[in-house]
Length: 220
Image (cartoon, helix red, strand yellow):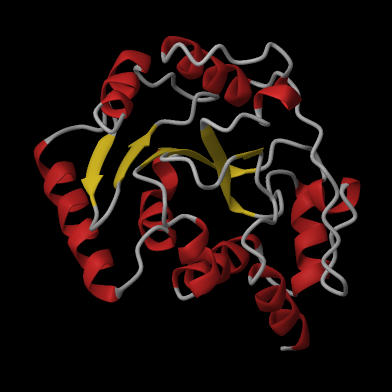
């Protein structure tokens, strides 16, 4: 319980674990977790003091795909990944502050929180859904391009502010799911003040860049 309380306290800081950019931008991207290996260990994040050192970016498939979207938007993104994420034109978030992709990551998470991988994911979803600081952090976004079909419900939970909005978003998702396959266009969900476009993760299956750019241009 003590570790759980410390994790909840850490999640009160909405700026933990993201790639970077301008959180006040209308355009947001959101991945699953940071691409750095052994994130907790490398970045000295723990549940005692919540240290968060800068993230070293590299040209992984995810960052490369973000670059292609920005280039298609004529944003002239930097060819240096770290510099790209200093732009004022967009913000790139992650659902989860600590990486939990490898077995070593899972061990780190368990030592830090006492949670299994799925318990950690669920705790973050519920905590952020109820967190006013997190809601204020993303409130100026107008479109959020989310990458990771396997976490549709998590994206919806973390970017809705009430049970009613969550229920409305889930109804849209299930209506789509029962009438069509989840293709390269992704799933478009209308919320009260913003739109979610939930796509395949580019490391698994490349989403349609032209479709993404089309929806982004609608808010410009």
